[in-house]
Image 1 (tube, rainbow, N blue to C red):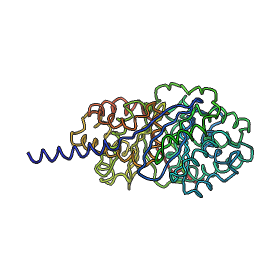
Image 2 (cartoon, rainbow, N blue to C red):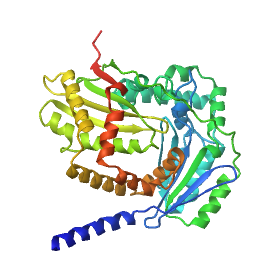
Image 3 (cartoon, rainbow, N blue to C red):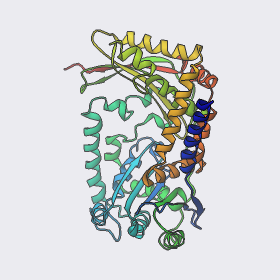
Image 4 (cartoon, one colour):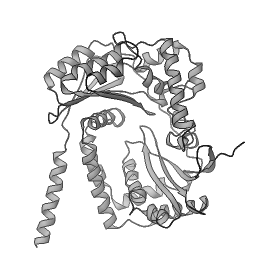
Length: 438
């Protein structure tokens, strides 16, 4: 009986910790269409100001790839009131840090300051939205920056074409712009004229195509007034017509990609999967944990512990319209890529034919509860999650509700998804090999 009481007490403690992590927020729209999300947390004297624009690599046109990522850099060049090259200096001089990133679906900028500099963060982002200087000098400067980034991260980096999807996406998408990489084509950027950059900016970087998040130590009334003062008069843009392309079924095939920077090849299985809004995307997150999360995971025990693989991987990369699921292994010793393929196929078959054990299922649930709590720690994480959930998933409160989605996933769901999505008819098999010297 004492053991039962102890278990019940521990359960209450876990539940209490999760309830304590609930993220309170308020959201509203300005008259120009800018969506605003406020998360007030006065426990630490820091505040994050962020803006997410609903524009990514998928919004580019044929022959002009790389624009969204290019603008991630270009909009740090300067504004009407911020001299060229001063953006980062202003942030660091005021005790802050800032950055930006781009995906297929969105572009995200943020600053984190001591809380007494909230107004500075709002001014910086309003300047970026209203007064950016887009001229040929800035385009030429950032063109060289982007080229160097491509050389460093993709062209000269081991496995760069996998990490940044330049060697993957075109094999799994035939119609959708997801087939292009986020960094785009340097030839396209070289060929683009200044008026094309100006038109791209006018189309996408407007308040009605953005969400502003303020998270951290501030007072709502004063924050709302500052937001209205800095953003309220920015003109709205024309409504953006969203990408809407339905892909045909995956062409199951075996392909080869080469990389001169590697010494060890990789065997990969690549699957097309549903949107991040789909419950099955959450199921695939759990499948990844079963296969490769930690030393007790199935692929680790079968391949790494048995000295067949140096490393294993399995991860779900879900996006707004579709996702990809990637499984892989690096061979160890005399193990062939075909042997790795057979071993990975065997692990998929087990998921398709056998329910995972109750013990494994409970371990999964505990792991995702812990992940949920950790993901809501820190105002930078919270700001990013709030913006993403609103813009790409259509439900800001997923920051509190996603755990319930994971809790609702059954052992039967895992088996079903393995059958429906991780099957050979939905798969591209890839040998990623070292390029031969000429």
